[in-house]
Length: 273
View 1 (cartoon, rainbow, N blue to C red):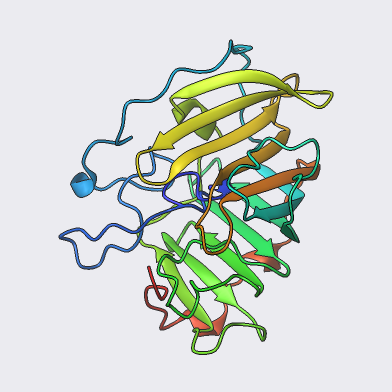
View 2 (spheres, rainbow, N blue to C red):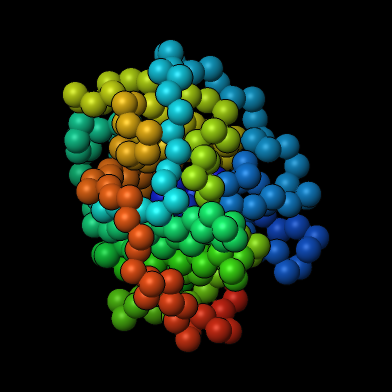
């Protein structure tokens, strides 16, 4: 779930989709240097988080939220250009937007500690590739998969036939990089509870001085059911991004979900990353 939970979280949270790449002395390092423990940690990251966190706007339920070790969930991801149309939405943005369907697969192996995660974006990819002039960064009207298989400690972006001209079939967005732990919400420094429509939501939040807010919400009265994720985007695509979850089920994903395409064998850092 873009610097931190960039999906998503992420993911994105996936995973944390709004991640910003930070070059460090280790030349083999790709991706964000600070993700508050959700994806990785690097000694060159500096303060993490990188700003004093604003106070929560209201009280918190004090409920504890943890993902199950295995789950699948469907979602719709909204890309909203109007900066004044601020989430949360009940249920849709009030200004024009683009939207894609998608789904997340997750498995945390309790014996080995390896964690796998895959996010599938059907028609619009989450715009986390930085520079607007890069092949993958100038727009997001293409499908993509974010694939992180724990044994590799690498997060791949897999593109398809609708990829932008000049974009690779597969590239790397994080190395080293692991999927968030089931209790990632406990790593978020700010929490509050609010009603979104007729649903009580517990928000788990972190602010970044450059990228703004990253906010992942669980249904208050469920230990593990996600409600939505939102974060700031990039102004040439979408100023706000909102991921609304549905059909959450604590089931083991099919084994073929974790197959790494042959195109990833020689993958390098994603363009603009």
